[in-house]
Image (tube, rainbow, N blue to C red; front, side, top):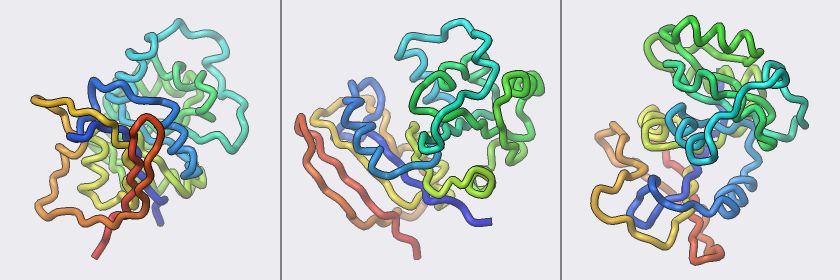
Length: 222
């Protein structure tokens, strides 16, 4: 089974930090729209942080138990969550107008009560892997079942590192912000477990507004 095209997209400081920085959402999502993604892939911790940043979790309503009716051109959101971190908060994403609906990527170790929570609210989910989500398998299923030709990864160092480590990333898109964060920086590429460097080919270098720079690289494969 073939996998989709995977594009990492992140806004980072000049010294590689992706935390505690004020991202220009207009630039971030304006540039990502050019990729024509079918699926937006996010890790559970990044999703949880995003919820906390933008107002928390409102009470569920009756409509949150049903799939929304949105155009097929709006991307699905796939959330990697084998531990049930997002239990009780998925309706935040289901309500988001730029999300067609949510598909959960879970594993054989995912708590049964979390799976029941998903079933009760009619969330699709893909079980891949035993202890942790098998990303390669999950992406192949996304491609086959949901016609996910292009997947945009908008997440932190853990998910990005795992995808790069497994050689699943095709392109890396970076919005370089005009600032340095200094000591104690959590860098985007800190969790890559490869021993050999990952070689890249520059595809785009474009100056944007507010002194931001957009870099797009192709990941070279031997």
